[in-house]
Length: 181
Image 1 (tube, rainbow, N blue to C red):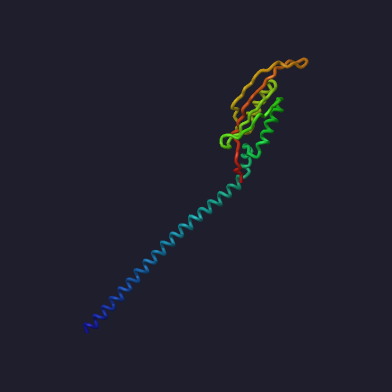
Image 2: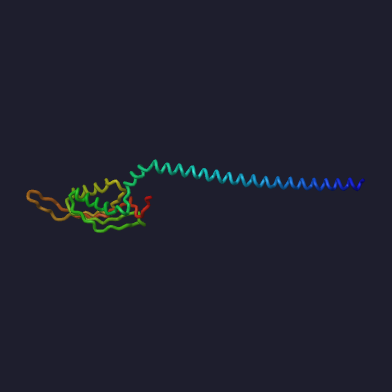
C-alpha cells in the first residue's frame, strides 16, 4: 500500500507542479498582455493628443487668416517687387522729382531688396520724397543719401536751385523666396 500511496503522492505532486507551472505561465502571459495593452493605450493617447493639437492649430490658422493677410501687406513678395519699384517711382512723381532707378538687387540671402535711386529736383521736393519713403508701410532703410546742389534754374519770375540726389534704399521687409501656402 505504501507503494500505491507513493504513486498517488507522486502523481498529485506532478499534477500540482504542472498546475503551478500552468498558473505561472498564464500569469506571465496575462502580465505581458497587460503591458502590451498599456503601451498601446499610451500610444493611442499620444496620437489622440496630437490629433487634438493639430485640429486646434488648424482652427487657429483659419481664425487668423484675415490677420495674417493684413500682415502680408507689410511685406513685399518677390513676385510683387516690380509693383514695389513702381510704387517708389510713383512717390518720386508725387514729390515732383525726376527719379531714376539705377539698379535693383536682391541681397542678404533673399531677405533684402536694394535699390540705387537717382533724383533731380528742388531741395524741398527731395526732402518730401525722403519723407514719403520713410512713411511707407514697409521696413525700409536709407543706407546712403547723397545730395548735391546744382546750378540755379531760372523760370521767368522764379529762381530755384536744382539738387541731384543719389540714394541707396534697402527694403528689409522683402520675402525673396515663396513661403505662402
